[in-house]
Length: 144
Image (cartoon, rainbow, N blue to C red; front, top):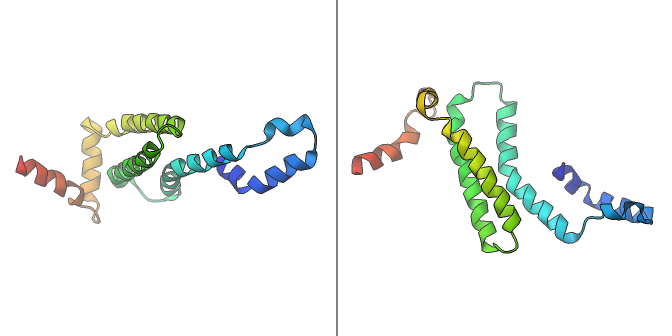
């Protein structure tokens, strides 16, 4: 919805101005609100990309679960760093992103235990991944 509103930003402004009465004045979107919409779209972009990628594939994708979570957590971390630079101005967005991260952590937590074995085996059996994702953790375990 926000993406479509952003695309129609100029048209929306023209329509509200063309009506020239108070009937639609409460629909007017201020520049500061458009800026916030742009930031929200930037925050939602990684989620949207991953949703489209997973939703349009016709193949089994269980082997990509760990990579997907890792990629998404990395994007969230990047956005968090950017928002923390202007923490005072971006407090609402940072709060929303933190809530999204906590929710994602709940889903990631479901990849452990019995289900974790399933995801790990699927990852290892993928010829393009094999043990690549585990090399760093194996090295870290050997060094401790």
